Amino acid sequence: MYNGHKRDSIHGERVKMDKKITLDELQWEGNSKIMFDEIMNDLGPMYRAAVKKKFEVWVNQKQQTVIREWNIKHTLEKYAPPNYCEKYMKIYDKYKTEETEA
Image 1 (spheres, rainbow, N blue to C red):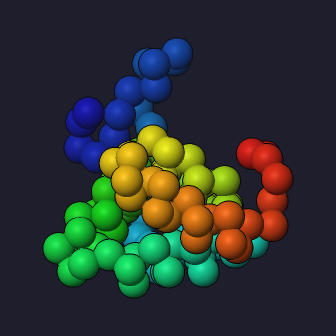
Image 2: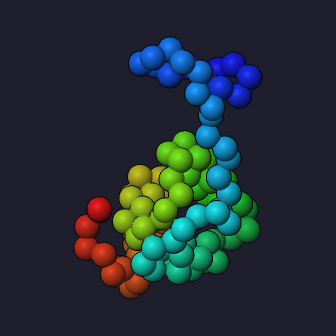
């Protein structure tokens, strides 16, 4: 990395690094926002802050600006401890309108 740029691994050119994405900039599809909000509201304040931060880091690592329902499911399955995954998958199941990953 150099001055906010990184080298294009194929061409060796400097390309501008992507800007930081905030949760306010996300486009939520289907019921993904309802799912996210209900899960966040159920968490205690300490966990809520940690989960929000982890989600922001994931969004920026993936440069993901569109959040779909399956993103919520995948995030629960990958990052939540088993007891939380089981609890919050019920919220996912209650609101899901998509059947599979796009």
